[in-house]
Image (cartoon, rainbow, N blue to C red; front, side, top):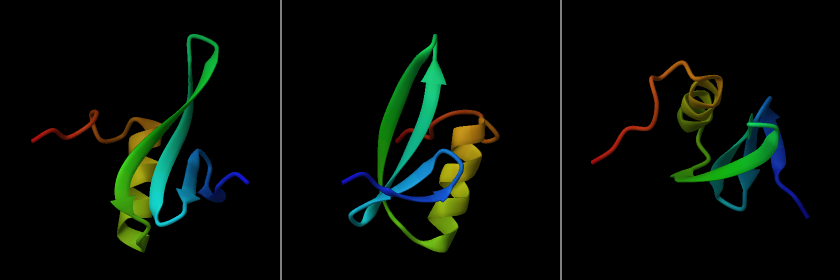
Length: 58
């Protein structure tokens, strides 16, 4: 049940990461589909806080 919290708003789900955030009063969970490594956890934490300028694409 549920993911393991590794930081506020970041969860480990099986072997990948997801971020948890609220938008317009609704709780959202977004899977990142990246491995749960220390570096990726830091990236997900920054992404969840909005420090990266948004999702990187292509």
